[in-house]
Image 1 (cartoon, helix red, strand yellow):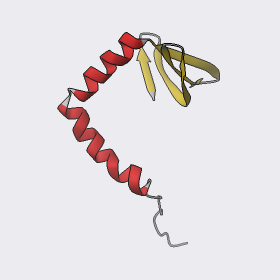
Image 2 (tube, helix red, strand yellow):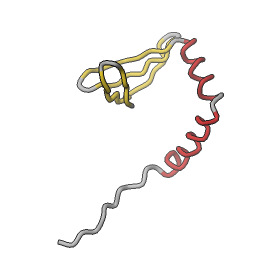
Image 3 (cartoon, one colour):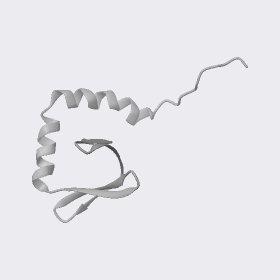
Image 4 (tube, one colour):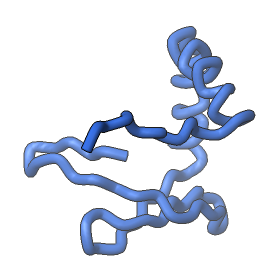
Length: 82
């Protein structure tokens, strides 16, 4: 996942997701730093409304279906003459 801000672009690698009380907590790493973000009930409901009500999200989800079923295709590389 990429986070873009005025401070720059940062890679955020999601490692785990957990529910802590009324919050959903996403744990991961941003560069060498451990990071976490938490969403309360209102944040989660807003995220659901933004995704479920968005036709583009459903189109994107359908394109992800083959990856979920079959996994990623391995890069076989190209043949070279040496």
